[in-house]
Image (tube, rainbow, N blue to C red):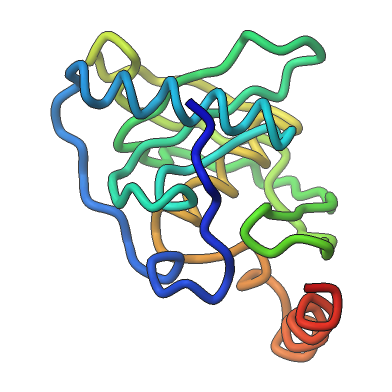
Length: 163
C-alpha cells in the first residue's frame, strides 16, 4: 500500500533509524509498502524513515524498467570508489527543489537481503547514488547536508517558497 511521505522539517527525518536485526513478515510488508510508494513517486529509492518507520530499511530500484527493487536492511558501507561524480538529487520529503551532490562512482555495501542473509554487493552509478542517499536518511541526514552551508540555506529557502 502506498504510504504518505514525511515532509521536511519533520523531526523523524533527523533521527537515526533503529537496526532491524531479523527479517520477518512485518519487515517484508514494510518493504512491499515502500516499493509501492517509491514506484508511485516515481523514484529510484526510499528509506523507511521517509514514511515514518524508524527502522534501517531501504529499497533501491534504478533500473530502466520497474520491478527490480533491491530490499535492504541494516546496510553497512564497506568501500567507496575513490572517484567521485556530481549528480542531481532530490527527495519527496522536500518537494520542488534539487541539488547537485558529489558522490562516489560506486559503493560496496553489505546488508540483510529479503531472505535474511547478509550479502555483499557493489552498486554503481545511479544505484550507488540512491543507496548512499537512502543510507543518509537512515542516519538522520538529508541529501542537502552534503552541501556547503550557503548552498544548503539557499536550497531550503527555495523549498519554503515552492512549498
